[in-house]
Length: 315
Picture 1 (cartoon, helix red, strand yellow):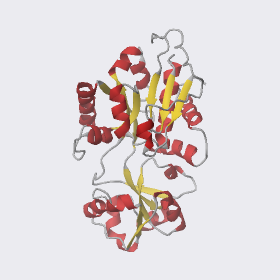
Picture 2 (cartoon, one colour):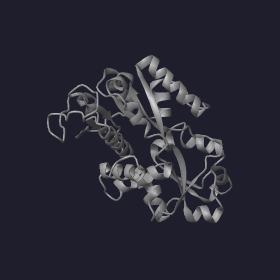
Picture 3 (cartoon, one colour):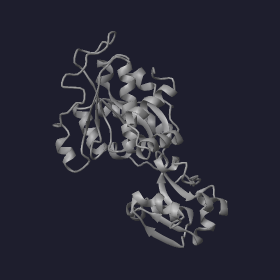
Picture 4 (cartoon, one colour):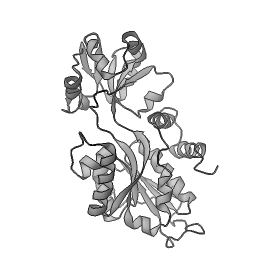
């Protein structure tokens, strides 16, 4: 039986992190299925960040672990993301959670992300997490949730835009709309323009939730996006994402961070987590986000259907 708790994403989340009760399946965790070796009453505790993508991934992990015979408790939407989940992992409040490579590299290990080979980064993440925190990273889901530049399809077709470098010759005729955080942060819009030599005709600041609407209405031509944004999978939205041909953006590949003692307490858990290795493309993750955010489907149902489709979960 799967239990869950949804934490509020506000400032109180950190204070409430360890005190919120509330399991949807009752007060007593289910016992491990026959054949599992976990101590009676032990539950695999999963945390997720406050975003649709993480809710879906948390459900995938939970479903696979339950199928292996272990009960699961999911704490959804931990406010502060990495900054609050990692200390809770250290203290043993959680056993595992989905994390992004550059987030762990920068926010936890305090390294610079630029210029690091992805494979070398992952190997060092595993090594340093084991040495410093008694944790490791298991598998890579396959998708990369990083910054990208999205352009209206008609604009991309008119000017033959495929790469971000292609924008340089025509930016003077286009309007860029971005959320204030991206426009102001040094590694955001200013660095984008500097790297690619972009000088837009107009630059407008627009709420993050309204960017795609502004693109569809023609109020803006170009915006910043994430590669797994739900709207990029919207069949009614004609958008093109441009290749980052100068490799400006660092990569945020998703993986599972897990405590080493959890791997010991739950035999076979590492093999279960490895089932997530390579199962998702950017486009597939965006499509799953779209099903939840736009079509209003339940994240657990979306996760279950996807795993069944991939042959990883029994129907």
